[in-house]
Image (cartoon, rainbow, N blue to C red; front, side):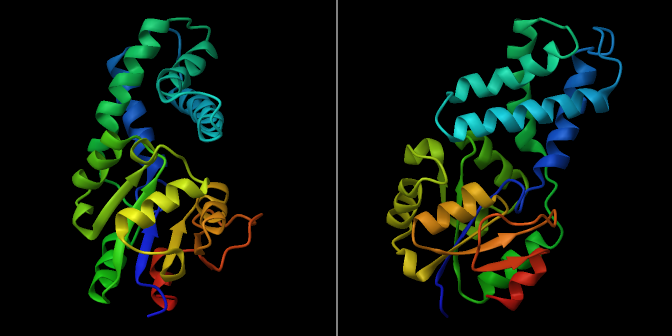
Length: 231
């Protein structure tokens, strides 16, 4: 085998973040009575939350804001779009969101099957994620995929974030491997693919959304089953 160690991203690659986060926010919309507080349409609220979440994650990844600010400000800014200036509510929803989110179990199609296939072929698999440590462990345990991964490397534990090469060097150290015998598999061109390139790795871009890539990966797949053609 050309590669011995496979490093996967989690959110948007294996674990369906969009579906799981929408279900979670829907529950919070109901339990916190947001309709009665002046937010009549959940779909519109979710759209605004997603917009602010994406922008704040970019700022977090680039080191402009801290984890705690990301956790509550995405809620605060979404509420403000509906003229609901309630910081205690935003902070409460930020906590509730991260408590409930890891209990969701929706994976992308063929996730369990491809992990079983790769395990049976003798690959050693790991996760490299910018997500929060407690939350990410909860996700993989509840989705019952934790047993497939030898190491789970988070930005919190490594002290670095994808696409910086330091998080990958930390991952190599934990896994007892090197860039030459490893490959990075993920959906995010900037964090996963450029990050893998920065660390000297081959990469597989999991193009679930069929976007035009602006970073050149070693391989591209559009469905997880296609990994069988590469590995």
